[in-house]
Amino acid sequence: MPLVPMRQLLDEAATGGYGVAALNVNNMEQIQAIMEAAVETGSPAIIQASRGARQYSNDNYLRHLILAAAELHPEIPLAMHQDHGNSPETCISAIDQGFTSVMMDGSLMPDGKTVATYEYNVETTRQVVEYAHARGVTVEGELGTLGGIEDGHGSGQTHLTDPAQAEEFVARTGVDALAVAIGTSHGAYKFTQKPTGDVLAMKIIEEIHRRLPNTHMVMHGSSSVPPELIEIINRYGGKMKPSFGVPVEEIQRGIKHGVRKINVDTDNRLAITGAIRKVFVETPEKFDPRDYLKPARAAMQEVCRARMIAFGQAGHAKDFKPMTLAEMKAVYAKQK
Ligand SMILES: [Zn+2]
Image (cartoon, rainbow, N blue to C red; front, side, top):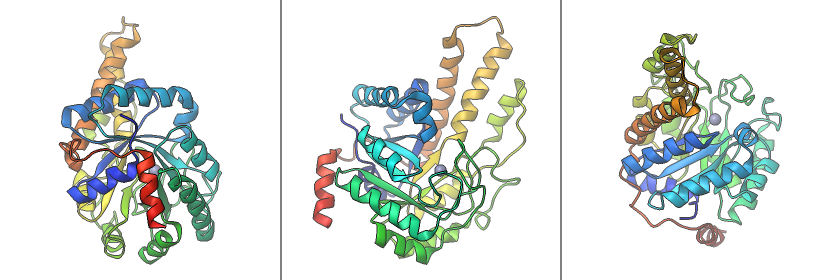
């Protein structure tokens, strides 16, 4: 099956009232973990790669690995998404590489650090939408800034999304999906105690959904940072500080109010690291990479499976006939 435009997965999620985990990858084992979890649960899947991932693995490796995943599992609708495109050039190069969805993060300047003006954000995002929609490709924008820095990306400041501005932003840019800043941040250290609905500003999500019922919202930095994963890492010689992520119940509350894509990366990183540390400590004589990459892959699969079930996407892989980019292009052309 060719890769599916992400817009269709999100439209279907809205119809079915569920969310879809967007899972970051850098290598083959992570792609395999996601696909195995999707097959196990019958879930549509979004695989995403940051700019850092594209540099680490090289676009050609990444593209062929994800195409292999689609070829091996034709029953799973699969979208390939550029996470945090820092400029129109990055998004265009992703589209030219076969990504079926891109995020233009115009909330920051191309350095990925300096907070951009609203007008800059509107202008760059609109440009990307024009290029992408002419090819049937989905676009996610971001308004407001998330806390935390990941892969060198992030201002380190948090600016919550203004719902009135979100309404105008979507009208002026034509984005398919909008990443909203509600107080979450990237990375493992999000909160020093379990966050409540107020800390997470879930009200913003509810208000944006009221104003924009047809725009798919995206929650970034939405790993739950389960204490048991931190515990495994530390039991086997790791040194991670205690931390709290976004509770799955809060994500489920967001899904009730228009959140359709939930970005999860940290939890998978934690699972992989814990599994590898365990092998190294318990069987220090081992040196075949498969001895630790297999349990690492299984540990990530377990996290992906749990999120797919919690977000409600499980069982929805066969609800619809996947669209091609050409078909999606025709849909966008009609809306013009
Ligand atoms: Zn993000």
